[in-house]
Image (tube, rainbow, N blue to C red):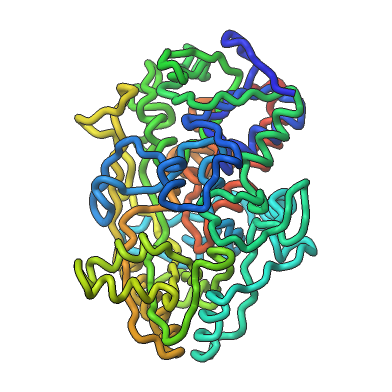
Length: 519
């Protein structure tokens, strides 16, 4: 049953954002009898609103409010994130990989690297592994906990065959949070091939139709969609007291809170903290050391398309059926620290055509190539990005959004380590397809980030970060961060599984704090 809480009810936990972090945290708290109000900036879509059309769903899902980029990012669209109930879990391709143990000890493993603010994670791998297991079971990650792996489609079999030609071992299909069998009241994957458009079968894990409805069934949870948070208020004792948001009618509303957890993705989380200026925190909540927004990471990204001699039909089956993890280790002999993996990644005809423009130009050359769409293969490289203080989210000095708040300015530049990794990864991917007689390979830039991390990093002490190891903001006892903003380093793996694991761990901590009346 759904619940409605009074705006003056100061006993509720307010969670900002309903995606991997916020949706998971909300349900974990509600299942333990803790009252939660979840504020989501976007609308609540039904599965019936999904359409197997990426261009159409892009407009439905995407956070299109203005922000500005600089450096190696697109000025007008520096980063992709979703503005909808479920957040990016409605759109993600469900690759669910664990961070490697050495990646949690980046400073100890890689040593000092000029320009990089490397650190070790302030929690142990064994503890995180416990929550990884819980998260995999919650999400139904195929290939874990005796859940069968999903079958390979032709697209991944092609990539794997090329890798084996180069001497890499045979790779299984990926650990995906997509049902390979009927589970949790949801159907198994039907290989429809439109994972990023919203899963019509609900086989792909998304908080939209897993965590959120389960939380609602407890009677301890209220979801308020189309509620854009613009400010968090702080009392004289340093604790946050309430959240100000604009509702669907355009009215400003104040919700009292016992505690607040921000899970708005690393860009919007940092922006909200910076915009929430108080008497005690004149530069923004948690920003007493000027660290909010700093150490922004987005992974080392790049895309490859390969025109093959035979039909591939990359659009058929799971978009990201597998990944090659053979280069995801640390080997400084390659000329860079850490590693990367290569993901098979289908592109729509529109996306492929848009990217090919820079190579083929307008006219018959482009149309002649696009007519061979069925013969194309696609891949993404994803490598560990090193944190740098100069890569950061700040508030724009002039531009404001429709809510009257300064928009986010996101600055990001590759360093020498990232450039060396990028070149090695792109060359390796090209070699994989060329081993199978690719007619031509194309490199596409990745100027819009999709994995946004690190702007409120966790640390053991206030001088080194914004949050403690449980995501509690230093200096603000009842304010938490519950998304990828807390990552001190980026790791090679896609971040969603780690975000869910950390949210589950944070929920245990919050319950203990409330039981002990610390909160």
